[in-house]
Length: 136
Image 1 (cartoon, rainbow, N blue to C red):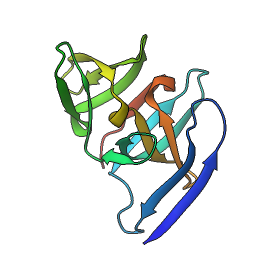
Image 2: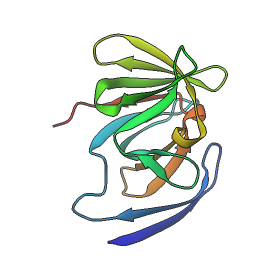
Image 3: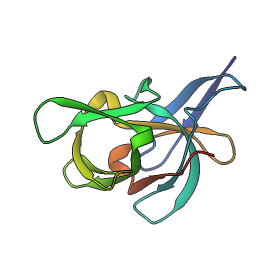
């Protein structure tokens, strides 16, 4: 296992990224197309979501849905995450339904690997969309 430490600068980037890696299994296995507000896109391998310090989950995202209670939404059930006003996101589920969700601190930062193999993290509030690709 090796530790990767990278300092990122720019809008929405959240400082140093340190992700423990294991060459055989370093991602959650979810590939996605990340679209930024300016329209730039990139293919990424999702590592997980968490706070600005560390990954909290490699399998799901949590947030406040319609009720005040905290709900969990599995990545493998989500087709697309889209930004929405006021610190919210809209989840397009694979079954065709939509779910609005308020972001919570422990599940608002995406951790991912870029196409060039660099680790990055980005706050979901500055992501236009994250389109999950079908697993091969």
